Length: 441
Ligand code: CA
Image (cartoon, rainbow, N blue to C red):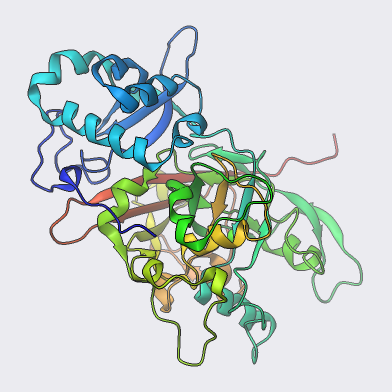
């Protein structure tokens, strides 16, 4: 893979003339994440590409006339209600767009021309950043895989394929929603171990999964695998992803074909796509494989890729119950961990996905799988934190939770920081649980 490119757009000393952008915890000028927005009340509604800067959204097509060359064409393409055609242009164009936007936002001479294209974020509606054709969910968080496997197979938590194959399955794109859209508790078949037969009703083991979403930029033709050395170039950027999971439905349905209705009722993503360009300073070496683990097969092996294949992104999960909300209490942190706790890199997931000739398309979404750390305070699901509900956790409010209850709100956050660089963040991926909708009228 190409060495992550650092340039003037990563300069921590750069100053932006947009009020509140410098030192913004998520969106300083060194970030410039992409999304789809429309100003509230606009008639007719015209969702289009935008860039988060501080607490404002910059209208990309609105500033196209201030850009030149490939960056101008890219900003003009962002008039589409999704970012698919924009990211399909590839990293060369994305880098040039970033460079010119950075210039517009840091040189005060551009303020009079740019300011009319800035909208307060709280006066904008945000939309899914992509028209998502396909969604794949992997299982690359090895601590999660071990924790879950141990609940089923205490002596042999990982199946023999895990350290050879980046395990994944095809998810459902139609039920992916933006952060903020409530999650309706799913109904389904469940069968407690002591029951003779299953019954149908609301899930009683509704859980979240802390994941990172990988957005595909330019794709590959059917039948044409993506070499591991080129895999990074097919990634446009990252968003937070919550793979909502009904553990009781999952336990009864998942064998022999894997997840189905336990997973496809809803998936949440954060609205802003933090680009690979913005993440360049936060690339770190993939953690070494434990001694005795197999070397990845050649199509997944690239020594250069391994030196900067992981992302040093801190990820947090917070819970806010209705009682806490009513009492004015802040959300309670359930876990904090690093995205680097993955057995496979993002590039390896991409290369594996396309290794049989499967074609990835611009705007396809790949979930990393639940990212849990090695410690008890960095577990990425309630299934792990509470031992499948057997050890309910006690919240500061005095309430207990084995799994999520109606009205609970789950919040994922993420950010990257490193000495010598400006901190950048992902914003939030949050959603509240709504009661199940019964089939009977
Ligand atoms: Ca998952």
